[in-house]
Image (cartoon, rainbow, N blue to C red; front, side):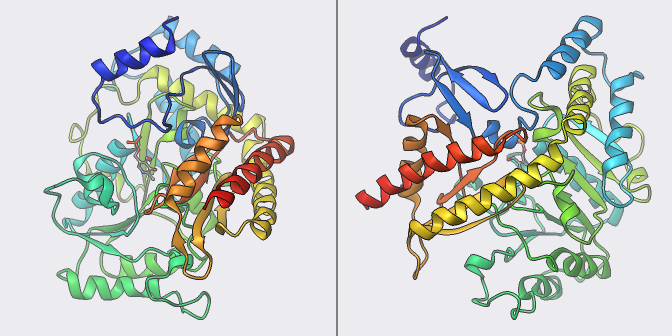
Length: 432
Ligand SMILES: Cc1ncc(COP(=O)(O)O)c(C=O)c1O
């Protein structure tokens, strides 16, 4: 194995500097097993990151590894221009679990590509190109996906696709209207009608949102939010795209994040956890919307590949057999209540929020002013790493500790993670 210094030097020489690295000193990971990853020296880390909320069944799951290896030996690729079994069976499995009447899928290679396809479908269906998206959203790094993303640090110089209007996100901790739930009357939802009336020609293509904003800081909308918004969107001729790329496949304690809300999307995008780490994305639409893209109007060379689709089928079986959706709900509740107990002792915790095992801990310098504590999160992640715990970073201000472990996480893992977080918080509060 190449030693770490040599590998780091090669990385700097041969990879674009555009690649960010999470830590000051490189973390060189060589192996994963269940909820653990290991570095080149055998150092063990409890993984609350899961490769950006991807490895839902745990690292190197034997069933998925075995099924993928078997499919690799049988046939790796032929394209969706031929009939292959894994792609069709996967579409059936997803349709059986998807909310409402979502039924017909298209497979691609990433979340961003799924968003591109979903928006193309919605534009074709409505003959309109105007979208409402949310502040702090993240939908990917391709042109349309980035045009729908409201995170300045990632937007670069543009230009972007025309016709995107950003509405305030349902972020109760930092309400754009300075109101409080529930007396706010869900102003962030009703304001969308105002946005349509004032900033569009009165007809829209659609609305796109994550059920829980992941990169935006694990922002969970109030229960009334999506039903109100969907009603408005439909009244103005638009369709509702649920971007379930990060929240999907059991992460939030339901199969799909949007199932926490009394609403049915017209289109849903999927990625990340769908194949437990193999590159696969998808979008699924209702039978009314799906046929608008005619045969040959959309295509992806690798999309629907037998290997990635086999991995996704094995992922679904694993989630079901190991009851990972239920586990995410139960262990997630416990994790959040333990973190709330930490918040009683740590003034740098402004808020703990989330659904299932998609959890955010927002750090603030001062609970009164809620000033974001971004430096604190950088320190926290470093200290956790030094003590064998990996956590994520998110939020518009980079101050939300994102906790998205594999869904096989257990009570002992929660206890260990909280102990390490407790010590790290004590340390950063001492130095602040
Ligand atoms: C909600 C959401 N949509 C889309 C994407 C883009 O996915 P990908 O990085 O696979 O293109 C992400 C990635 O973080 C995401 O969280």
